[in-house]
Length: 503
Image (cartoon, one colour):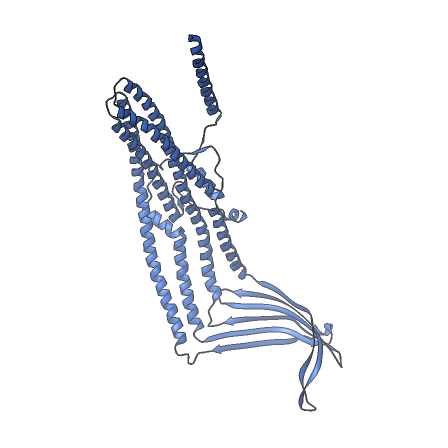
């Protein structure tokens, strides 16, 4: 009988041993998680995120606009041709013999070609041109005739004397717009960094909560087993045992919930990185930048030099001055000079059209002045001048707000280091306190309420530390975004814009 009773017990023990060995083997086959740093994730975000691609395309638009402006300062060569124009129609003509208008049939074949070179001069607003043209006309009817008109060369200029010179103002605004576009791109990369920091620390906090929940579950199960033995010995009451059992269920539920939150945080990061996050990785919390203090005056000067918002304010001031100049020039008297000199000839043969060339000269001075417009032009000038004054006031207001913002961010960053250090110390103390309280609970010197309170204090302190670390790095990247300066390496943020266009 004893032998028959031992057989089931041995079988159960063997099954438990096999299950335990299988669990150990599966856990040993699973490779350990690889740690990834915040810098690793930032590099992936700047490479893979859709925000990065969008920033590159926005820069590309501004780059080609600036290239178009640079090209507008170079000579342009145009070729125009109408090699075949056939016309057959009844047209109204005057008959001098009968002193009446009559309809006559007209049929002709016309060919035309022209080559021109145009150059705009930025300083004076002058347009200089050189062209060469050729025209062949063949009439058919009662009499067939053929004639040629050739202008081998003609040189001329158009010079506005009192008009608005758009070339001069484009030379001021276009470089500012392109400079702003480059700084905007670097600024957008810092916006991506800030999004990445948020997602990374959400992931890190969720991972830390899972680690704490696992440790809580193991601790709760161990304490429950000890509690059952102590209850059997009569050392604790039934309600204490039930509370320990309840802790096991709560710890299991907490682990499940935190596991779901971890998967959600990791999925959000993978979506932002467009599946660029490797599998089987875990976040590695970044350390503090030891003893870094940012000088407020230095940060303000760097922001005024590099920040695209400041460049945009300067651009608005230039554009307001341009609009005022245009309103004044367009609404006063207009004076311009047109002049050209060339050689041309008309003949019945192609060869004769290019022989015995005659001078072709033209000079004209155009002048117009308003006599009575009931104050319309004066109103436009007043409007433009007041708009400029509004822009000047807005510039001062936004500059003051910007200075206040950068000062506030730098001050918060310089203080945040102490807050992180304090939160880390609090977390370490809370953990030590929990371990001591756990030992005292096992020796029956404190009750379950004190143990639970110590565990919650440790968990809260750990989460506060991670949150303070998040605030530290967010503030750093906010200051870096405002100044476009890398304070860690003490260098300005730069970008190889040739590779940006290639990608």
